Image 1 (cartoon, helix red, strand yellow):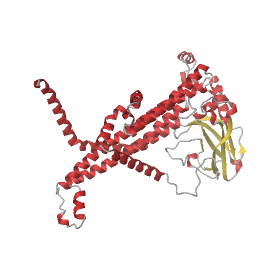
Image 2 (cartoon, helix red, strand yellow):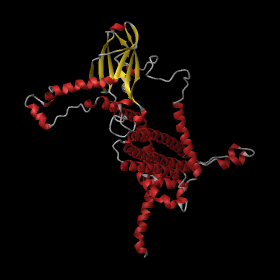
Image 3 (cartoon, rainbow, N blue to C red):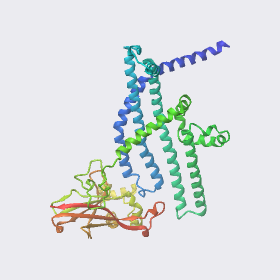
Image 4 (tube, helix red, strand yellow):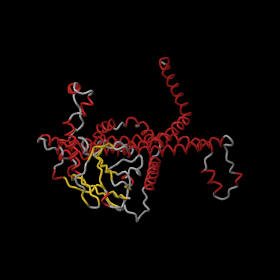
Length: 478
């Protein structure tokens, strides 16, 4: 009997010794990972913010595609939460690095002397007893800091994975809600489809309710699992949310912490971390300019560098319009109006024939045209029908804009399609003769058709459209 169990015991002993050795040397791995992670986070956070802004500026614009706005918002929610998780991660790693640095300092000091000679200090009164009882020896402090540092390191990853779980679960819920509402609001939906959509909305609301309970159970140290009757009902939902939230990745860390450390310490550390993050955020948003107004690009009394090509920062995108400079010297002003994919729903109403203007000939048509021209590209440029469609398209698309200079409507403007040199923003270019306005300051007011907010989850109609000011740009004629 003992012979049959010996190999198993031997394997367990080897594993235990390997884990013990790994635990003794884990501080080196912790410092290595922490150092690299801090470097990558510090350098990568700005890069991610740049990517996030660029992606949302060009891809996640409500109304720009056939994707439901709530799904777009779900993706934005995920992308906007990532920097928050990264900041939590960075702060925790900095705390861990500080603790490990302190620990290494104590280890170095203990190599000189590991004892504290309280007798030589000659404390009197209550200090004679209080100080020796409450001051740890260097050996005790080394063990204590080693333990705390490892816990903080593990807690860092627990916190980050928990944030990811919350984001994933609520993004799935928002997407499902968006799909349900879209089908319910669709004019082509049958009575059965509407009924199923309403049922789906109810299911999604129940999903959110159970998701909140799932995360509350985590925050309350598995309180709901301890109830005899409620745990029976809660179990299938726990399994479901554990799967979609990837909770199985960090579950071992979670249960190890709540079973080996007092709840008050876990809560206290979490609250301190939240206060630190909130303090940094509040400090960044602190407004001491009480008498300076909030910026708006719809007032001629405010000037934004984003409107001027020679002043705009390299990473900034054109949002509405731009001109080359504040100063005009040759009597002609170039005005670039950005094509906003969010206006696709409006253009679909006023310019239904201008939809999908990219010329994509079939292979057969390409070869047929190639018999008459040197190449398919040449055949495309020689297509008179396509040119007529382009002309009709730009005339229709730019009809959604009105350009005023000093309150005077500029009619009969000649527009061309253009991709701006800054970030290849697509838009419309017109050149205005401003010599008649004379020397001094002048203001361009750009108005455009805007759909009412009630069209977020339904199709836009002509009754929903109204002309509103989009930007005011000041310039000076020399």
